[in-house]
Length: 110
Length: 112
Image (cartoon, rainbow over the protein chains, first blue to last red):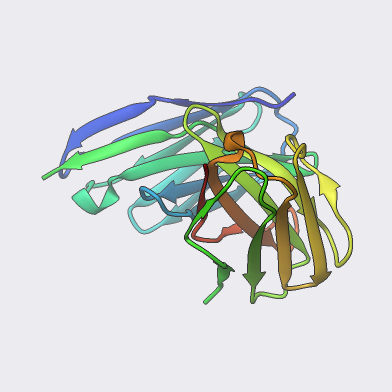
């Protein structure tokens, strides 16, 4: 059974710092991995989708990497801003559904 | 701009009531999903649908049913609401498993 773990559970950083969020999964037989952002009380917004054949994807200040063989992904956020404060979730698609991690709560202090 | 909408942002219902949660997507996606999200338990899949009139059970289907009569609409039904169904309900859709999954804004349901 696929399990997804995200470390750290919470992170507080000053504005301007570069930061890394980690995601690990137990079964490397995945089709893709997706990173989402969730603001309090809201739905999920897709940030990046990495196919299993890809190593990384970039969007603006965000860069996500995937190492399928070791079961790991990282989300790198450059020059963090207070508006980046949210919960970040990773999810892997394997079998016929997305399996989600519990998320990392990020707070960027101004 | 892709869009998934849910009929209500907040709902308050009584125990034993029948509850309908509606989800509509305008992207012509084949696949639609219902999740619930609870603190400490994360997102859990309730039901999903690969096509009109098709449905598959997710991880926690007990106490729920679904309906998909049209491609763009996927309804979640609580046959007899109970207090343990108080939760945030999220609908999502995508074109296929290699594609991005898009989420609606969520419905926060309180069952008293």
